Length: 191
Length: 139
Image 1 (cartoon, one colour):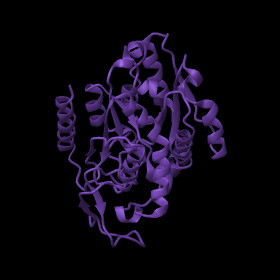
Image 2 (cartoon, chains in turn orange, green; image 1 turned 180 degrees about the vertical axis):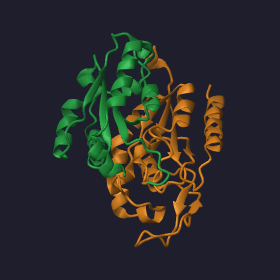
Image 3 (tube, one colour; image 1 turned 60 degrees about the vertical axis):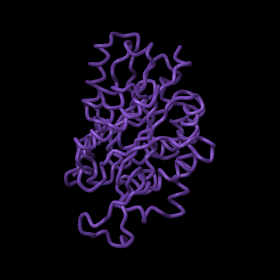
């Protein structure tokens, strides 16, 4: 009986299933990030795609931005609305006893889990030289708001990691090893 | 766009086709695999139920893509209410945002799986915006 079985559920950042959501020049794949999809499917995870907060807020043709530029009351309110939209689904899985994890996008100002991009001086005309932002160990704004919404519902923290797509230099093989290590450590710890 | 790999095409896909239950797995094509091989991104729709706010959020995203040169195709599944696409609620949300509902392709679990896979693959290959629209937005 499927109903009595604990399922493995991965909440995935929107652009891991749809690279069209990325900021201009940020897409590394045509559609899905197939190493992530393969790693999850081969381990029996169900996938739940999170909404993309940046696309719906600043649009498909938005400028690049760092954490500080999205750290505004209006953007946080927008993220809270998205969190309230997806939280009932997540709550359903958690209340049922399913094993839920989160795969974000490390380096992203919104979807970063272990790291986000930071540069307090960014602003005005978008003519910054390349790579002058910093990577700092912190959640992105969207993940902060999503976790706050889940906590407000009395739900336990969801184990999380990030696919390191937005860290400046992208290392697919390293990211794959990192993700698979996270998933396999979960499997080892789950009876 | 310099070094950007996006494919400019995406599919609106019911949860049932992304996470098929074991009983349906052999009756359905591997829709996610076909979409991946075809270079499509995915916008996931939730299982049937009351998802008023989530569907509004998804409609916002479809509208943004539709207004900026992206091709969106809805891939439904027969035998599910509304083909799994929440059409009765989604269509008016899209209309309110000035967007026509995307064209639909319906997967048939009762049909031969290999033929359904071929039919989906062909539909994905042929679906895109008119060439002038592609040039306008995609450079």
